[in-house]
Length: 117
Length: 154
Image 1 (cartoon, chains in turn red, yellow):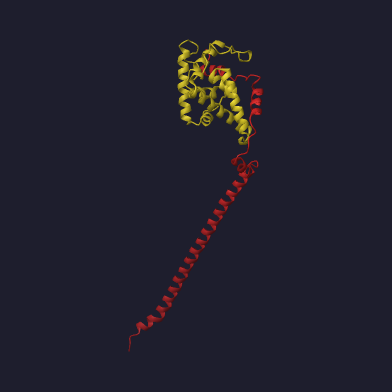
Image 2 (cartoon, rainbow over the protein chains, first blue to last red; image 1 turned 90 degrees about the vertical axis):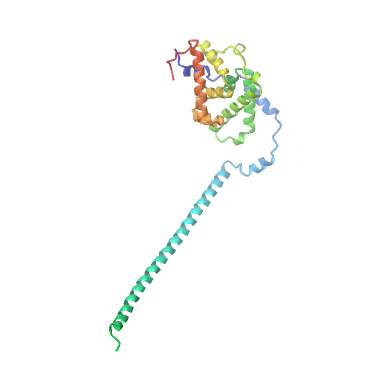
């Protein structure tokens, strides 16, 4: 016995349209008044250039996004450079401080060891 | 395709022709929105489905014609078992509109469930449940008259 799905495919297979359907459709189209372009149609013509406007809008959006990413990256780079500069300055001050401390110690301790006369 | 969807939905060639004319007129009016041939087919299926379901809901008396009043099958649609095919169509025609359209899109247009969900703008789980319930109903109705075997097919 045939299975249900194959029976459904057989029973619901495409049925041909009557031969006069195309003529009837064309007759209805011909009897339609010419469509006046509405304001939306006139505005739509600005973007009706075949997909070009969408492609341009997409390219612009992409350029903006890429530009934003680049700007953000540069800001991050500047910030990190600033942080590095700060770190270097701190290190320099520490070293300088150490050296100064060492020099100070060398200069001061002998004086302290020498009892006052 | 358009005529066929409407025909299997209403089982009435006159209504199917009216629906087809409406759909093709709308296509003409919306040609600028069609992006490709594939898009056109998708658009036609969607508009036809919507039109059929809306018409059936607005005018239940017109929703379908009894199979006794349906015209005799022509040579191009002779089935291997015309009586069984008529019974299948009768049971399909008695289904609720939404379930009926799911079956037509699945077995006439051979669409995947995701495509049917997109065309009818319903969740895919809804498509699955309608399909399963419809198949179960069909199976029960046809098994009771011994037309199909319980153990054949899914």
